[in-house]
Image (cartoon, rainbow, N blue to C red; front, side, top):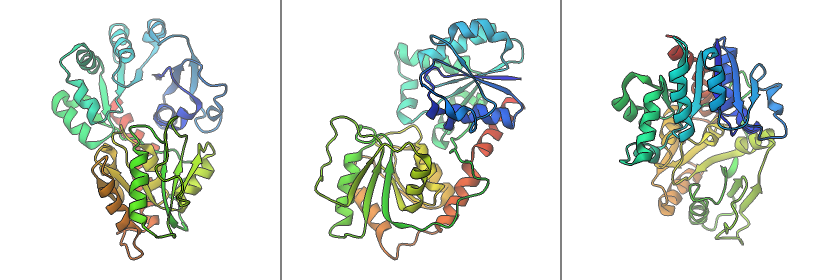
Length: 352
């Protein structure tokens, strides 16, 4: 059986995310021959040799249309991502050319704004709806989006959450937590609300010197720290060393993810896997799901520094009851969000 993912923007970093991990576990646990079709966007795909060993890359030019025309009859499952024009063309073309029994699988990565755009009464909304119509199987990553789509599209919609990459065969343990609030991602962009987090931290911390805020990741051009003189606020820059980033997750007590809107937010999973207490917003659909699993976290309205400051202040108190210990947070995250568990559900859905 052949599982083909067409994702023409693939870079090496994507191999440790859903785009690389789903094909890998379809290969490892599902018995598929997995191929990722992409343009060549990176000098090296070094993780292909060890972290997703067994997955093959096929380099093409263009959007994959000619690849589907040539190879449709040899594909058992065609996997594409997102509701866009490329997915529309690929899915409808595959629907016309595929052999009997073959299936197409659309992974949405949808947030609430994306759901609203699906039902716009214009050509863009129509194309999005037709894209879902062309797919045999459609997955949503969060329970809220899944429930809404299932009510409209029925059984073709399945729940496949995101996972997080780990080589560990058991949950992480032996944490030595410090008074650190951590965030990670592309800082300073409109969705990430970095300015809101900094303002909330300064308000929550007050005169306290025993807490710090670490912001890990590249900073968008033009972003200005509203409190550049505050030595408790540390921008680390982009961190490509996963071990170093993992150590930052392990030492932090709180992981703050204050996005105004977000499709998922895998950084929250990576933090929870290291025992962090999660504070996020209602603009992040996955936050509620993750906190339900771990039993440790808080959700506030987006773009509300006062509410965020109150949540941070509560969690910063010395006698704050987190309900579960970091080791328990890590264990629950590992059991529910490891990629092997996540993809096992997809394998069953594709092979009923």
